[in-house]
Image (cartoon, helix red, strand yellow):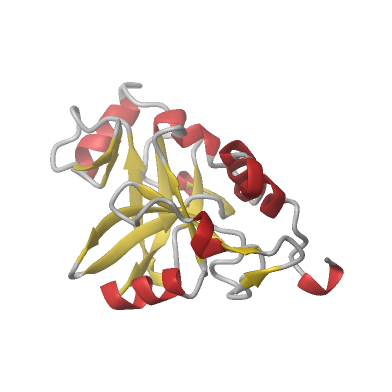
Length: 197
């Protein structure tokens, strides 16, 4: 999609390739209600398909409201995507401590032994700023995501420059583009409705 009035398009901005650990940042005018202004962390990306979590869609509910028997833990739950919305997932920074954790990139991991996680929470060995919970996930057939990228639905960014705490709410979409600088920062100021541009 041609971004006007700037006379450049997203494919020119995408200097990075999609891969595990990268961010998918929704183009400014995406209308899909699940992905509008979303920032997605890719936790898997291979010829079998792509899998990740929307980082910036809080659900106004805590982990204790979803799982009452979970140790008291002041951690919100986010909408990770439209797939398996009856399942709970999590990313965290404690990959060395939680058995079965899958490395994403840097100090980020996803999944792991849930009983062990609960015990760590009870023992105060892990804190809310080190973990993020999601209901559901975002998934694509490999060719499907490749086509969406070619169709300029996604801007690709690095996750290395961010911590779990950076991904809070819808304002995250704007702040990440602003941190990327220059033309990305200009995109961050586009209104959601292109007719207002």
